[in-house]
Length: 258
Image (cartoon, rainbow, N blue to C red; front, side):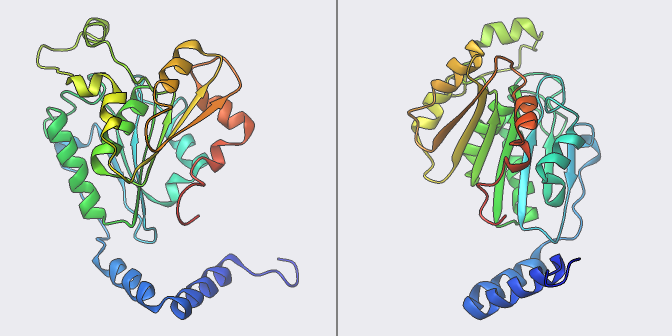
């Protein structure tokens, strides 16, 4: 470290001192919140094949992450978490083996959409974080928007999200079971977001020369809370474009406390 530079530990220490000085109530609240936060939360055995949970008592930020049909994030999940900085925070990652947009049977504990929503709300309550975000790619981006809306998270990062779903085509393409259902309000996300929850901000990333992704994103352009982030290129794999341009590392710079 060069002379005159401050170490990261000292910066952290002095930032905490400023918080105590400038806003003592908030300092006490954050301190008490740390004591309320559990050190370890167990994932039920029957969920372990579909849920990855990583708790970090030193972070007050939680990410719900939804993988796409290929069970990844347009790159290996660990690479995505490292590049975006998610590993430094609390994480709940889901995958949907049925490939049914997280609307159907994900596990024994989550056999349908309502049970999945209830389970995620339970994780949110247990982890008890001040900031909560959803992120997903492709089919997972769709899920991030839907669950982000219902959970009233702070913000959603949706990468190449489909926003209008043809249920019959989905059922045919992925051989979905007869029990799989897609409510009308979930088949068209303009209808879902028409009832804005008053809180969540939606950030949609896509390649502007990819016709389908561009059309799907533009459909939400007039919805409250939505910001479009068109990228140069014509690929569905927008994560690679963000990585190449250096934007993947700053994907969550809209978060409250960077």
